[in-house]
Image 1 (cartoon, protein in one colour):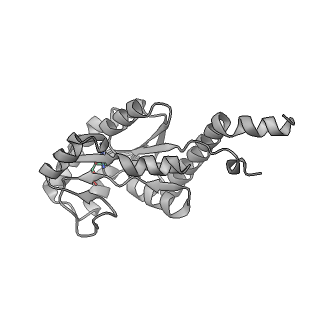
Image 2 (cartoon, rainbow, N blue to C red):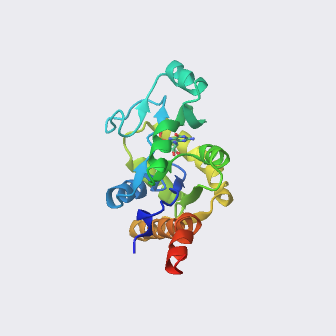
Amino acid sequence: MDVSETVRRRGVMLVLAAPSGAGKSTIARRLLAEDPMIDLSISATTRQIRPSEREGVHYFFMDPEGFMKKRDEGAFLEWAEVHGNYYATPKAAVEQSLAAGRDVLFDIDVQGAEQLKQAMPGDVVGIFVLPPSMEALRARLLARAEDSKAAMEVRLKNATGEISHWRDYEYVVINDDLDDAYDLVRSILRAERAKRERETAIPRHVERLLGN
Ligand code: 5GP
């Protein structure tokens, strides 16, 4: 029986973090395409738009002045400087999804994940995606021909620092095989949903089962 008809569970805030090139975005895209209950949090950024990207789909692209104005108005749940650009999570869309009983996926860095946990304690589940090796990471970054060589080197250099934060996440997934890594992320999400139902929807269900 679907107990969600009677009591909504609280949505899971699923943070996928990883050094650039670990395969996080591919996993995220697949999850969003296959799971109708999860929404993507679309971040704001001051980074240059890439040729394959679209405004409002991949990011909300902003100039630094506009970004700082929004930040000062309290429109962001978290914000951080990553690889020399600013990134932030707009608050309103996340609140809307959670209020509708939906889950939200965040493709954000370690600083953002830490701030989200502080802003919404208990709702955030962090998964850190690790590459199988630094060689694999370099190869994946090279294959992404959209970034300049200099930008790629910055990302590779930052990867070491990012990887050192792996303990801050509830789960770690090594992306050796993309299908396996994806299956593991899906399983984690299913288990976390069940945990939320245990907190919110199941007590009512049990009351009914017992005839109270
Ligand atoms: P990219 O420029 O490759 O799209 O993203 C660079 C890094 O910024 C990635 O690690 C990505 O997860 C992170 N990032 C993207 N959006 C946000 C955000 O809203 N907040 C934070 N803190 N990091 C973000």
